[in-house]
Image (cartoon, rainbow, N blue to C red; front, side, top):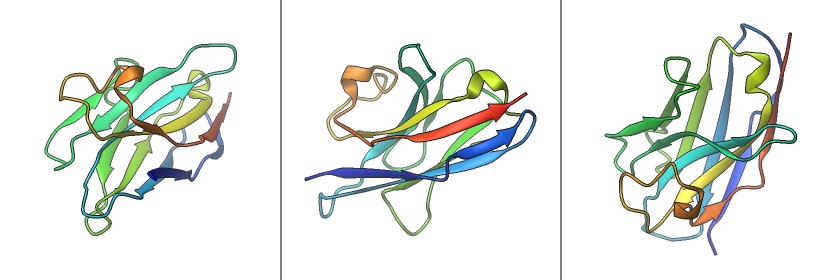
Length: 127
């Protein structure tokens, strides 16, 4: 059974930075494409970023381009990080790790392309 566990959320002031992590497990020998979605209070879930299984390709939602960076751990092949800088109050949301086992490249931004979800980590940006 594939699991994804997020960590690193918390409270940060506007303009600050934060790094959140996700570790996927449960499929020996498989390196997953991984990503992040977020869901602000009272709103729908939004694509944030994704990275291919090799780490060679990254994808970002328009609202975070230039401020967020997704990358993979060099040694833990199914661990991914989301580095967030210049945070804004509108970045406040529950951030969900997305694990792609079967999704083709180009569909990572779609919720129905995600095969497994983490339970989420809360990021709150105060103004």
